Structures are given as C-alpha cells and as structure tokens.
Length: 439
Image (tube, rainbow, N blue to C red; front, side, top):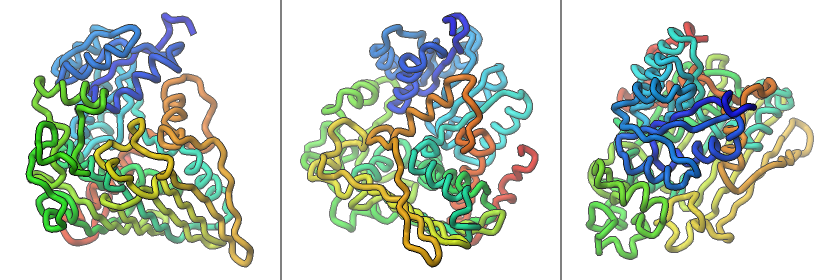
C-alpha cells in the first residue's frame, strides 16, 4: 500500500497499555497504518512513548482532542484512557468523522453506553472493542467445538476465574480501585469473560443476579494480618519487604510512565492495597440467564495463590471442559511485580492448558490446540491487532471482531451485576438498556 494511502491513527490515553497499539502501528502494520498524534491529560506519558518511537509524533493535551483530530486529519482513534472517559472520546471521534477502536470495557455506565450507540447510529462510523480473549487459540477451539454441535445444545456454563495475589493486587493499587473510574472488576475484568460467553453461545444476557464483597483488600482486609502502614510504596520505609508493595523505581517502563510523570497530574500508581479508598469488590459470584435459556454461574476471585481459569459447558450431547493454569503459584518476592513484565514469572510458575470433550457414552477426547504463545494473552494480542488494523481481511467464520453492540452486551452483564449487588435482587438487562434498536 502506498504511504499516502495508509490510515492515519491517533491515540488518546498514553498509559502502559498504549504501548501495544503503538508498537503494532509503527511496527508490524506500518505498511497500512500511520501514527500521527497522541493526546493525554498528562504530557509526560506520551513524551515517554515518543522517546521509544523512531519517528516521534505531535502530542496534544486531551482538552484539545477534537482540534487534534482536525489538524492531524485522523482516520481512526485509539482510546486507551481511564475507563470512565471511553465514551467521551469514542463519541467525539465518531462525530468528527473518525472510526474508533476502544479498550474494553467500552465504558462504565448505561449513559456512556447509550452515548456511544447513539453516536454510531447517527454517524454511521465504525466502533471496535478490543476483546483480545476472542483471539486466543484455546478460546477459538472452544467456539469451534460448540458451533459444531458435538456437545449439543448448551444448557449451562460454569466459569471460574482466579487472579493471583500478584496480578489481582494490582487493581487495588491504581485508579481501578475506585468504582467510578472502572465500574469495578465486574465491568473492567469480568467484561472479558462475559464477552467470551456471549460469543461462545452466540447469545446475550437476559437476567443477572450477583453477590460479592470487598473481602481481602482495602481497610477491611487489615484483619488478615498483611497490612503495613504506608499510603504508597515509593519512599516508604515500612514498604520494604512487603510482598504487596509495587516498586516502580526498579522497572524502567513503570518508572518513566508513572513515577516520573507524577508531577504533571499527581496520579499515584503504587497505592497500598490495604489503604482507604477502595470501592470495588474482590470476591464476586454472578448468575446469568441468557435469552435462549442457558444459564451461567460465574465466580471471580482477586486474591488467589495461583492464576488461571476453568470453564465448563454442559450440553445435550456431552460436556466441554477448559482448564488453564497461567501460573501455579507466586514466587517469593514476585508479588511486587506486575503480571506480564519481563522476568516477573519464573519457569517454576508455568502452568498448563487442557481442553477436553466428554461425550455421552464414550471416552473423553482431548482437543489439541496449536499456535499458543506464552506472551500477549496466549498470542491473542498480535492476532487481534492484525484483524483490527489490516484492511481487506477475509470474512472471519468465527466472528471474532467485536463491535459496539458486542461491547454493550458484555458491559450490560457487568452493570446488571453491579445493580444486583446494590439492590440484592435479580436485574433484567433490558430494564437497563434495550439493544434491539442497535441490532
């Protein structure tokens, strides 16, 4: 593709997750895409990303977002801001004549969801949501087995997700700890899982009931005996030796994007996970009934000794079982590292993956899955980015690309669960937002 015909991309929200998009646009897909600008409320973070780029791009204050779109002739906006602002930037991008690719969750409340859907309908522009778990080869294999009819009609699903005390704790250090910013883990994290089930079943939620609480982290968790007296880890002598303390100064990317950027906006990335101010839950159970009758029992635990998940499908012809152990324990001293950083996981912590079909009246059959990777969510990130950025891709028989309605379905499951937590009773999804007009 000639350089002049490359699509022009701008990024808003230049935290650590932004690096994935920047590397894809300026690296693997530079023949079809061009990064032309970045925007953030904190100018230090895009400046840090610019220092890693072969060709730095103009940096704008987020307040000048629409001016950036016009001046830089942007075709596609990448939204990687704090979750509560996704709808603001997505809708503004659509109204400016751009397409949008947004990090999940699509936003954090019903009003923001409606704002995006209305803007897309009004403008006819495209919205994509980065549900990268759809692109994991294991999850693709699950989709194929279910679609083949091998286990028949699905009657129920059981889904358990465990975040270990390295990964899970990190949500309680940063902005996610405030439900107003993230919607809580039922929106921010479980949105991935709710989307997977929607996609696997080719269905959407009808009714949701939830129970949950803040059990391990926050001030309430001090009774478990792990808490130390400091507000943030950097510069606190009492944080020395604390396995829950994040040491940003020891990791170059974290130091540059957050520690050295604090002067711009005062954002502190290394809060004590047992400090006041946590308004999200860390232990949640959810029951979902889907529109075609299947049910799901789901549980998310954010303080486990190992990381991974189990999902089981009970069908009219048999059962499908997926078990993934991403790390079977957290090594001493490793809890202070952020999951996914180089060197954070030792060889001893590597887990395993197994997908098993159990038909009626026959021995179980293991499904062999090729193409798995230890990096980027099992290789999903690379596959997703290629699908999002490269034009003219052949039609995907698995339907992995997620649009605004897909984003809304996953979001509404989490929002209905949050509403159920508040009300103590089941919540009809349609009472929050009717998606029929957007089908």
